[in-house]
Length: 102
Image (cartoon, rainbow, N blue to C red):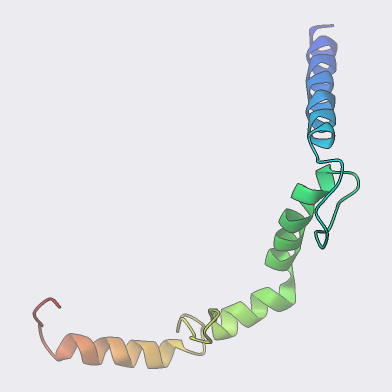
């Protein structure tokens, strides 16, 4: 009985939260602005896209092999294919001795 009551209360609060999100959406958007229907999808869709990109095996394999690249096209050097060069550069920098802070 207690479990059923807790489940019912949790379900009611969840439903109120979803209704609140849908009701909080603006009735009309400015020209040129995309609208979502229902409104809850406006906040969920970007999160789902990010999630699906993060679990996509093709993306993960590319990140593992080549690392990540920023908007300017600079590679972070952390891919498995970059590791030998990164290691050599790191050892060379270490062996060049201490430097004064910039």
